[in-house]
Image (cartoon, rainbow, N blue to C red; front, side, top):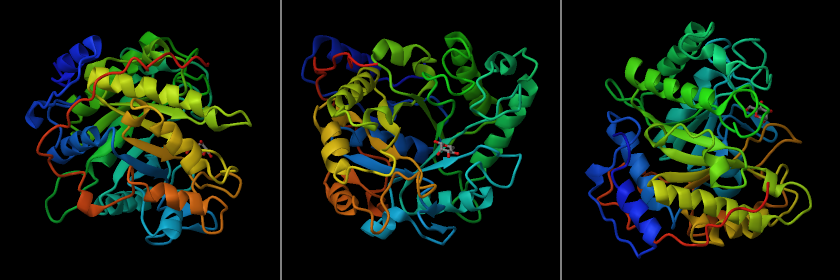
Length: 396
Ligand code: BMA
């Protein structure tokens, strides 16, 4: 079975809530892809080991542009304000194989170079894909039903396989050495925020069975047919109220490496919803422990960061407030795309001092070659006891 072999031990520990130890040999951990390349596997093990004590900080399109600049070598808003680069960098593939640049004006040739740069600086690359609606050819935000059509037997199935082959070529071409090297590890996070209904793969626009079938087909095709072996697969809902809602579209432990959630909702408006945020992350962290999988806040942010102490008093405090919410391994804020649409501070922004405090916290990690997320760890971290504090979030 393609599951973490520690799952049984963990599940038992969660059930009986005993103090735990599970120091299993690293060699026993299995990911979605049993033939995963060693560095991608090491990355997974290190993310797992980090949970509970370290939190990698990430930023979408960090090297591509920022507030007031675009396409400048080694430039980054995070670097400008901290002197360091994020430990996670997110990239978007909408338009891959159709246009030279993505939906946000990032040229794919540049993107590849920046992904390799990120890898060389010890950072992790994660990929989202706002794939066009395959039936209407409208955008990802065209909610007209389409999943049924790309499943095996559907009228757009061959077209979908072509999209996946294009992605497989892209992912496999990402090689960091010369003349012979293996593709670098990538976190692949397709069909995200499906618990909302704004994308064609979202709730209400396809059934949960269709979604699961699509996910399983996608993994099998990339792994078994295209033989792509540098991917970790991240499943990420939007906010959900409880574990049941989180798992409604879940394709199964054999098909998911990272349990993610996107949460902007808890940081919108004037309401203080930090405690709800903590409960949501605790639910996610607890599920990660129970399943023996890495958990992550795969997208978040407070647009324009109107609260200048948001980084420490809301984001970090919210994550640290419960040992279970502190299980999440990384957090990624969204892109600095426009003067009215940015999520990381830039020079002169009022939240810079707080951001510097945040990134200086011993839990929070920026990119660091020496930390070497790609080196094989000697052992797996001991598993903390599950806590009864993983209560339902109690909010929609
Ligand atoms: C959204 C916005 C859009 C962008 C899209 C894909 O959240 O940032 O402007 O085009 O993501 O990256």
